[in-house]
Image (cartoon, rainbow, N blue to C red):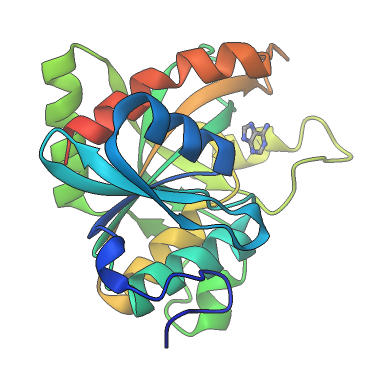
Length: 236
Ligand code: ADE
């Protein structure tokens, strides 16, 4: 069933078996412009840009996921199901719940806790905690080691809510589930991978802290996030 409602590409071969997914489609463009050769644009629908190119000899696609579980749920499902993608590595940002995390720390998501109904509604799992792929995680850890970049394996919270009325509510989730940081997409990505027998992983860079209220600027993020991109690209 291609093209799909959200990806206009008619030729499956123009999408690589591995896709890197930042939330922001302009970050996908930045990765393609900065790191890839022989780049072809593969999607424009809703400005959710995607690009396929080569990192050295490795063919790779980078495409935005948008924000939140419904959005990454749609794009990752279409890539896995209709474009024969095998592996998706999300590269995103996270807010720290743990006082031990600093801005720009790079996290490897081993497990995502969520109160979201995504996995249940989809019919894949009633669990509140879903895991990423161990084999992808091992490759990411090895790549980080080679590049001398520290990445910290963590359980995170995939939340449906960015703005909360109670500023302290995160402390319960930190205590009860051991969630060290929060983002808004991994749980749905991991649910799709589980449902479709594919692989998913997620690297996150800490962009803000719910503990100290520190924040990075958009410009700082663009520069600092290249570490995580290099780890993902070198794991291919
Ligand atoms: N991604 C980055 N920072 C976040 C936060 N504070 N809450 C949810 N998702 C985030």
